[in-house]
Image 1 (spheres, rainbow over the protein chains, first blue to last red):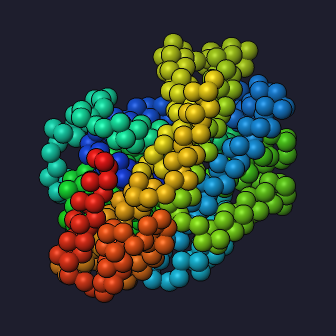
Image 2: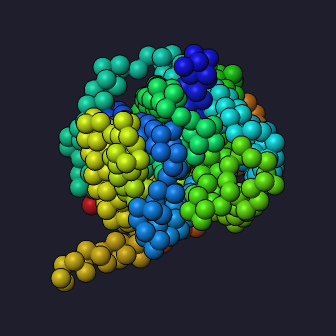
Length: 411
Length: 115
């Protein structure tokens, strides 16, 4: 295990953890329910660690990416349904991320939002075309580390640490009305979905194959998943806690993604604001690139095309055309003028519906000794895997009713 | 069976309803926008924000408020008037004035929620 590679991998995972949905829902969760939803972030983070580690292990030992498994395990018809649903979910997520990046650029430069969306999409296409896979991942992930300013801001505002610690204990706040309980339930589902987005696992496992992981990389895989995502989650929890401390008492229920940047501006002034906006820019940009590539990976793997950024773009022509078309479609969605916050809500909703179908084939393969040999799921991975499969299935069943009953958490 | 159909259609009915309850989400959104606007102007007056960020946020806040105002099923209500008054404020309005609007909308919101 190369310590430099490991450190870079962990830092990339930390910087790339937060995306537009986590940013929005962490800020809203803090202002609406104080510290009471921290435990949902913590539990969901363990879930994404479990499935990321599992998908990395499967990629390293069985050399199988998620969508290849899906077709074989679910059959063609159900596999196609899952593919269609996940492509829609990822496309909406990609549009939300692209819109989010354009918004942040608008906050930073004042340039028109639509123009920024077009420029950003072109820059993304160029960066994926030019940079090798590892550098695509690392450039955005490492620069996303500017998000650490949110953790520094939390320390600077001297929050009630005992209340934050209490937030890690699973509970529902006492004295909520039925309406508030439903809203709390909606936030629980939304946070589970935002943290466990399916694109993260598609991207992570495909990345393992892009980088030609083998059994030697299993420890790096485990450390990156546990430390990278664990520490990344602390950034999301910092955003939530800052919001609970600064926005809740001021009656602010962040309606714009840019409001979150105030969390760093209040203690640190202009430099805090600029660092927060830069962190948001790179973290959301990284997520936009990952969602687009994850979608292209899914389609190419399902239909058995040649795929991967380790190949020159013209050596995998259908894969290349797919990711370019997907970026163009995401841009078209943004150019319709649809609100980024609405896109975030739809991304959350569609993603949670796809999650159980994404993780089931992965779980089944990771338990199959024929493919996994001595790297098959142990008792801990097995228990946690099925526990989280139950959690996401419950969340998927509850998502639509809660969305309508709470008007997307706004009513 | 009838109960299951009712449960299925209740959310749809809620989406299509009119009146203060249907407007509650827009009132809540407008209250938050007013409070965000006040917070931004307060921080800007302390020199903690860049001019570009403040200008951009003002533009988005106003656009969002106009969307909320246009979506109200009862624009001639007390809350409709409050949102309209908020939209009349200049971008650099005093934080206290904006907070006063946010407080009034919060009162209306709380009253409707407990009704």
